[in-house]
Length: 251
Image (cartoon, rainbow, N blue to C red; front, side, top):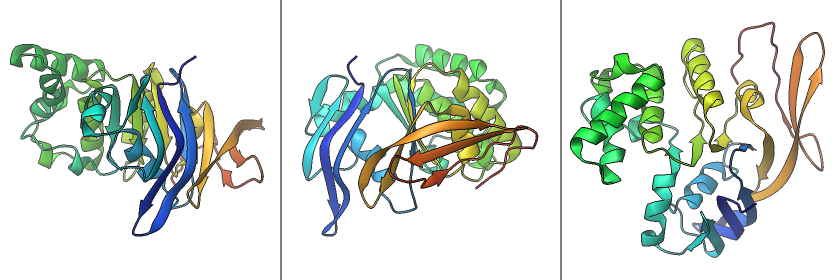
Protein backbone atom coordinates (compact mmCIF):
# COMPACT_ATOMS: atom_id res chain seq x y z
CA UNK A 1 0.00 0.00 0.00
CA UNK A 2 1.29 3.44 -0.94
CA UNK A 3 1.36 6.04 1.81
CA UNK A 4 -0.87 9.09 1.37
CA UNK A 5 1.66 11.30 3.15
CA UNK A 6 5.35 10.60 3.64
CA UNK A 7 8.36 12.29 5.17
CA UNK A 8 11.64 10.82 4.01
CA UNK A 9 14.57 11.77 6.29
CA UNK A 10 13.20 15.29 6.75
CA UNK A 11 15.05 17.90 8.78
CA UNK A 12 13.52 21.29 9.58
CA UNK A 13 15.72 23.97 11.16
CA UNK A 14 14.71 27.24 12.76
CA UNK A 15 17.06 29.84 14.17
CA UNK A 16 20.01 27.51 13.72
CA UNK A 17 18.32 24.69 15.67
CA UNK A 18 16.96 21.47 14.16
CA UNK A 19 13.29 21.28 15.16
CA UNK A 20 12.88 18.01 13.24
CA UNK A 21 15.86 15.73 12.73
CA UNK A 22 15.94 13.13 9.98
CA UNK A 23 12.25 12.31 10.46
CA UNK A 24 10.72 9.42 8.52
CA UNK A 25 6.94 9.01 8.57
CA UNK A 26 4.26 7.32 6.49
CA UNK A 27 0.53 7.88 6.86
CA UNK A 28 -1.75 5.36 5.16
CA UNK A 29 -5.40 5.51 4.11
CA UNK A 30 -7.83 4.90 6.95
CA UNK A 31 -5.36 4.92 9.82
CA UNK A 32 -5.39 7.34 12.75
CA UNK A 33 -1.93 8.18 13.97
CA UNK A 34 -1.53 9.64 17.46
CA UNK A 35 1.50 11.93 17.47
CA UNK A 36 2.58 12.52 21.06
CA UNK A 37 5.41 14.39 22.74
CA UNK A 38 6.18 17.24 25.11
CA UNK A 39 5.52 20.88 24.30
CA UNK A 40 8.17 22.13 21.90
CA UNK A 41 9.00 18.65 20.61
CA UNK A 42 8.13 19.68 17.04
CA UNK A 43 4.65 18.18 16.59
CA UNK A 44 3.07 21.26 15.03
CA UNK A 45 6.13 21.75 12.85
CA UNK A 46 5.75 18.20 11.56
CA UNK A 47 2.11 18.80 10.61
CA UNK A 48 2.97 22.07 8.91
CA UNK A 49 5.79 20.38 6.98
CA UNK A 50 3.39 17.78 5.59
CA UNK A 51 1.39 20.51 3.83
CA UNK A 52 4.26 22.82 2.92
CA UNK A 53 3.84 25.49 5.60
CA UNK A 54 7.38 24.70 6.82
CA UNK A 55 10.26 24.22 4.40
CA UNK A 56 12.64 21.32 5.12
CA UNK A 57 16.37 21.95 5.10
CA UNK A 58 16.85 18.30 4.18
CA UNK A 59 14.92 15.24 3.06
CA UNK A 60 11.78 14.83 0.96
CA UNK A 61 8.05 15.40 1.41
CA UNK A 62 5.92 13.08 -0.70
CA UNK A 63 2.17 13.63 -0.75
CA UNK A 64 -0.35 11.50 -2.61
CA UNK A 65 2.37 9.91 -4.70
CA UNK A 66 4.18 13.07 -5.77
CA UNK A 67 7.28 14.71 -4.33
CA UNK A 68 6.61 18.29 -3.23
CA UNK A 69 9.44 20.78 -3.49
CA UNK A 70 7.83 24.20 -3.84
CA UNK A 71 4.65 26.12 -3.06
CA UNK A 72 3.06 25.16 -6.38
CA UNK A 73 3.47 21.47 -5.55
CA UNK A 74 1.75 21.86 -2.18
CA UNK A 75 -1.37 23.73 -3.31
CA UNK A 76 -3.24 20.57 -4.42
CA UNK A 77 -2.00 18.79 -1.30
CA UNK A 78 -3.81 21.25 0.97
CA UNK A 79 -7.07 20.46 -0.79
CA UNK A 80 -6.64 16.77 0.07
CA UNK A 81 -4.98 17.02 3.50
CA UNK A 82 -7.20 19.19 5.70
CA UNK A 83 -5.33 21.03 8.46
CA UNK A 84 -7.24 21.90 11.63
CA UNK A 85 -5.24 24.60 13.42
CA UNK A 86 -4.78 24.81 17.19
CA UNK A 87 -6.68 28.10 17.36
CA UNK A 88 -9.96 28.18 15.40
CA UNK A 89 -9.69 31.97 15.22
CA UNK A 90 -6.77 31.39 12.83
CA UNK A 91 -9.10 29.40 10.56
CA UNK A 92 -12.41 31.27 10.62
CA UNK A 93 -12.35 34.59 8.81
CA UNK A 94 -15.67 34.97 6.94
CA UNK A 95 -18.59 36.89 8.47
CA UNK A 96 -20.83 33.83 8.89
CA UNK A 97 -20.31 30.10 9.35
CA UNK A 98 -21.95 29.17 6.04
CA UNK A 99 -19.62 31.53 4.18
CA UNK A 100 -16.59 30.05 5.92
CA UNK A 101 -17.61 26.47 5.19
CA UNK A 102 -18.33 27.36 1.54
CA UNK A 103 -14.96 29.08 1.08
CA UNK A 104 -12.97 25.87 0.54
CA UNK A 105 -15.35 24.42 -2.08
CA UNK A 106 -15.26 27.78 -3.90
CA UNK A 107 -11.47 27.53 -4.02
CA UNK A 108 -11.82 24.03 -5.45
CA UNK A 109 -13.68 25.53 -8.42
CA UNK A 110 -17.32 25.05 -7.46
CA UNK A 111 -19.69 27.85 -8.39
CA UNK A 112 -21.36 29.87 -5.65
CA UNK A 113 -24.59 27.87 -5.62
CA UNK A 114 -22.86 24.47 -5.50
CA UNK A 115 -20.36 25.63 -2.89
CA UNK A 116 -23.14 26.84 -0.61
CA UNK A 117 -25.06 23.62 -1.18
CA UNK A 118 -22.02 21.56 -0.20
CA UNK A 119 -21.50 23.74 2.86
CA UNK A 120 -25.11 23.24 3.90
CA UNK A 121 -24.86 19.48 3.35
CA UNK A 122 -21.67 19.32 5.41
CA UNK A 123 -23.17 21.23 8.32
CA UNK A 124 -26.31 19.11 8.18
CA UNK A 125 -24.33 15.86 8.11
CA UNK A 126 -22.33 16.96 11.18
CA UNK A 127 -25.43 18.08 13.06
CA UNK A 128 -24.31 21.71 12.87
CA UNK A 129 -26.97 23.19 10.59
CA UNK A 130 -28.08 25.49 13.41
CA UNK A 131 -24.73 27.30 13.16
CA UNK A 132 -25.02 28.14 9.45
CA UNK A 133 -26.17 31.76 9.77
CA UNK A 134 -24.31 32.53 12.97
CA UNK A 135 -21.65 35.25 13.01
CA UNK A 136 -18.32 33.46 13.40
CA UNK A 137 -16.72 35.82 15.92
CA UNK A 138 -19.73 35.44 18.22
CA UNK A 139 -19.49 31.65 18.45
CA UNK A 140 -18.33 29.95 21.62
CA UNK A 141 -14.92 28.28 21.62
CA UNK A 142 -16.48 24.87 21.13
CA UNK A 143 -18.74 26.09 18.33
CA UNK A 144 -15.73 27.66 16.58
CA UNK A 145 -13.87 24.36 16.75
CA UNK A 146 -16.76 22.44 15.20
CA UNK A 147 -17.30 25.12 12.54
CA UNK A 148 -13.59 24.96 11.66
CA UNK A 149 -13.83 21.19 11.28
CA UNK A 150 -16.87 21.60 9.03
CA UNK A 151 -14.92 24.05 6.85
CA UNK A 152 -12.14 21.50 6.45
CA UNK A 153 -14.50 18.58 5.78
CA UNK A 154 -16.45 20.54 3.15
CA UNK A 155 -13.38 20.12 0.94
CA UNK A 156 -13.78 16.33 1.24
CA UNK A 157 -10.16 15.64 2.17
CA UNK A 158 -8.46 12.26 2.09
CA UNK A 159 -6.52 13.03 5.29
CA UNK A 160 -6.92 15.23 8.35
CA UNK A 161 -4.11 16.86 10.32
CA UNK A 162 -5.48 17.87 13.71
CA UNK A 163 -3.35 20.10 15.92
CA UNK A 164 -4.56 19.98 19.55
CA UNK A 165 -8.22 19.84 18.50
CA UNK A 166 -9.49 19.42 22.09
CA UNK A 167 -7.95 22.64 23.42
CA UNK A 168 -10.41 24.68 25.52
CA UNK A 169 -13.38 22.42 24.75
CA UNK A 170 -16.03 21.79 27.37
CA UNK A 171 -17.30 18.24 27.91
CA UNK A 172 -20.23 18.47 25.49
CA UNK A 173 -18.22 19.89 22.58
CA UNK A 174 -15.39 17.43 23.24
CA UNK A 175 -17.87 14.56 23.08
CA UNK A 176 -19.37 15.91 19.84
CA UNK A 177 -15.96 16.41 18.23
CA UNK A 178 -14.91 12.87 19.17
CA UNK A 179 -18.18 11.44 17.85
CA UNK A 180 -17.77 13.22 14.51
CA UNK A 181 -14.17 12.08 14.07
CA UNK A 182 -15.06 8.48 14.91
CA UNK A 183 -17.49 8.42 11.98
CA UNK A 184 -14.99 9.66 9.38
CA UNK A 185 -13.31 7.24 7.00
CA UNK A 186 -10.19 9.33 6.34
CA UNK A 187 -6.59 9.11 7.47
CA UNK A 188 -5.76 11.26 10.49
CA UNK A 189 -2.70 12.55 12.28
CA UNK A 190 -3.82 13.52 15.78
CA UNK A 191 -1.66 15.83 17.88
CA UNK A 192 -3.05 16.05 21.39
CA UNK A 193 -2.12 15.95 25.07
CA UNK A 194 -5.56 14.53 25.82
CA UNK A 195 -4.79 10.84 26.25
CA UNK A 196 -8.44 9.85 26.69
CA UNK A 197 -9.28 11.49 23.35
CA UNK A 198 -6.37 9.72 21.62
CA UNK A 199 -7.33 6.42 23.18
CA UNK A 200 -10.78 6.61 21.62
CA UNK A 201 -9.51 7.38 18.12
CA UNK A 202 -5.94 6.30 17.43
CA UNK A 203 -4.99 3.08 15.65
CA UNK A 204 -1.24 3.74 15.82
CA UNK A 205 1.12 6.02 17.75
CA UNK A 206 4.46 7.73 17.34
CA UNK A 207 6.57 9.67 19.82
CA UNK A 208 8.34 12.91 18.92
CA UNK A 209 11.07 13.97 21.33
CA UNK A 210 13.92 16.41 20.76
CA UNK A 211 13.06 16.48 17.07
CA UNK A 212 13.35 12.70 16.68
CA UNK A 213 10.37 10.53 15.74
CA UNK A 214 10.17 6.97 17.04
CA UNK A 215 7.40 4.35 16.82
CA UNK A 216 5.27 3.83 19.89
CA UNK A 217 2.94 1.04 20.89
CA UNK A 218 -0.73 1.61 21.49
CA UNK A 219 -2.40 -0.91 23.72
CA UNK A 220 -5.20 -1.22 26.21
CA UNK A 221 -5.25 -2.88 29.62
CA UNK A 222 -8.67 -4.26 30.59
CA UNK A 223 -9.64 -3.77 34.23
CA UNK A 224 -12.99 -2.96 35.83
CA UNK A 225 -12.56 -0.01 33.51
CA UNK A 226 -10.23 0.37 30.53
CA UNK A 227 -6.78 2.00 30.51
CA UNK A 228 -5.14 3.18 27.29
CA UNK A 229 -1.35 3.44 27.23
CA UNK A 230 1.03 4.79 24.60
CA UNK A 231 4.65 3.80 25.14
CA UNK A 232 7.79 4.53 23.16
CA UNK A 233 9.39 1.28 22.08
CA UNK A 234 12.43 1.99 24.22
CA UNK A 235 10.58 3.13 27.33
CA UNK A 236 7.13 3.98 28.66
CA UNK A 237 7.22 7.69 27.88
CA UNK A 238 3.62 8.65 27.11
CA UNK A 239 0.58 7.40 28.99
CA UNK A 240 -3.09 7.63 28.17
CA UNK A 241 -5.81 6.75 30.64
CA UNK A 242 -9.42 6.10 29.83
CA UNK A 243 -11.97 5.39 32.54
CA UNK A 244 -15.22 4.37 30.96
CA UNK A 245 -17.03 4.66 34.27
CA UNK A 246 -16.18 8.34 34.63
CA UNK A 247 -16.75 11.44 32.47
CA UNK A 248 -13.91 12.19 29.99
CA UNK A 249 -10.94 13.74 31.75
CA UNK A 250 -8.83 16.57 30.41
CA UNK A 251 -5.06 16.88 30.41
